Length: 160
Length: 147
Image (cartoon, one colour):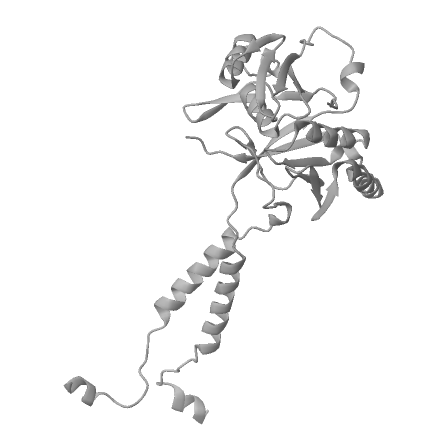
């Protein structure tokens, strides 16, 4: 009782040192483990083995759009062809795709049912494939992404 | 000068409150930006960039990450593996999946291929996955915010 009374009016000085130590330790830990990573994204592809050939043709089925990417001697892109006709670049390819399926991407639309089959040369640099997928899967218009064809598959790999 | 002389020899009281406030703010900030999923990223891979790559939302169901370098080797679980040997590791993944009572087609194979790697090798990897019963793929690209 006596103790309590005596300490009543006094200001208690808390020793901050351990807390600040710990806090700074924590801060340096989080600062050191911080790793700045570039944001990444995915292209989802569902490609079961052998189902495409086994699937029975029905009215809803639209023939796949065949995109052929040929490689130059150094693995660079030599030529693009869509359904057998040459296309100059990926922008042109996107325009052709839009011309084919339109911009309606609602449920059961032509764009949703159409499938793109990528036929690439073995030595082609992968970056071109991603560009081709980007060209067929959508476009950016006024900062908004307009989706086109989402179903993408590859032809079986060729050795060469 | 007068001030100094008048000052008591006892320790000066520094007000710690603003410093502690700021330090806690910093800790909170670093805690939030901390990335726990960095294990599956590797500096050896230079991903191709795309504006349309769908940003990764949350964790995928049973992901298997295969990273293809531009030299034609695959980084699987931190180890360098030849493309042709991936099948052995996939077989193991399949066994793990089946033991857990899940079908291989429930898993997503994340393909992080270098932009300079050969498409044929990417296709070879995909083919091997298909043969083991995996059918969901996520081709990963760097998200380009656009010009």
